[in-house]
Image (cartoon, rainbow, N blue to C red; front, side, top):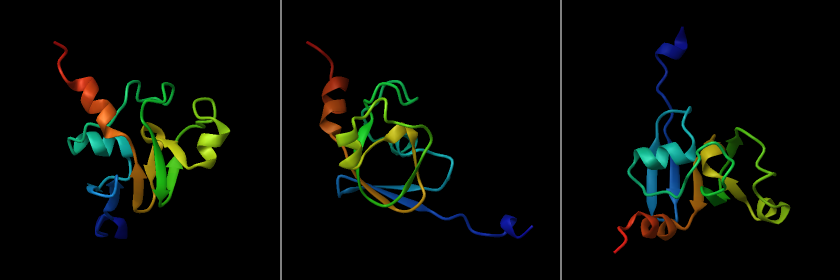
Length: 110
């Protein structure tokens, strides 16, 4: 009963040290939160099999929805790489991702 009156926590997702996304729902992944904030985050499949949303978790904690070991190498995992589409923040997080890659892919071809 008390949960109806408890304020929902806002989780902050910092991308490349300058873009900040306020995530109000604990049911959203890093990718869905970034896309909802109109950030051109690289992605394709959204189910964790392509690796396009790969990013580095610099700080904070995430809950992994699936095992990413079949997409990311052991070295990449040791360096803090995660799949944004399969990572739900459980604290404020700071990630690094190459947003330029997605922006170039979205530009019209001449």
